[in-house]
Length: 143
Image 1 (cartoon, rainbow, N blue to C red):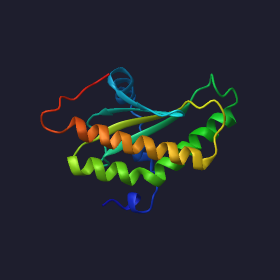
Image 2 (tube, helix red, strand yellow):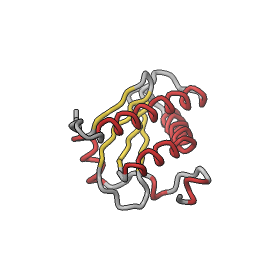
Image 3 (cartoon, one colour):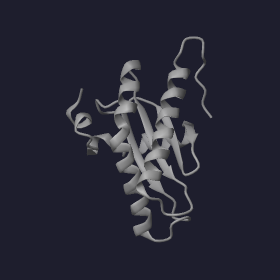
C-alpha cells in the first residue's frame, strides 16, 4: 500500500487537475447524490499510480463569500482524506481508476461531523454502485 494512504494524507498527485479529465468527467460522468453533497465520478486512465483523483468545490451562488466557500471545501477535503482508504481498497480490488468531483450543495455552512457523515454515505454508495456496474452480466450505465 502507498505511504500517503497509510498516513491519511492528500497529496498533490491525488488531486484532480487535468483539464481534459475534468471536462470528460462533467460531460460523461455519473453521479451519486446526498442532501448536501454530490459526487460526480468517471472511470478513466489517470496519470498517477493512485486508484482515484479527487477535486472539491462549493457553489458561488450559495456561498457569496470566498471564506465560506473555502471552509466548505476544506471540510470536504478533510472528510475525504480521512475516508479515502475505503475508496482505494474498493478500486484496487477491481484494478480501476476513477476521477471524482465532490460538490457541496448545502444551503448553510456545515460543521465537520455533518460533512463527515454525508461523505461516508456517499463513499459507501459510490463503492457499491461501481462494484455493481463491474459485475459480469451488468451493463455499465452512464447518466
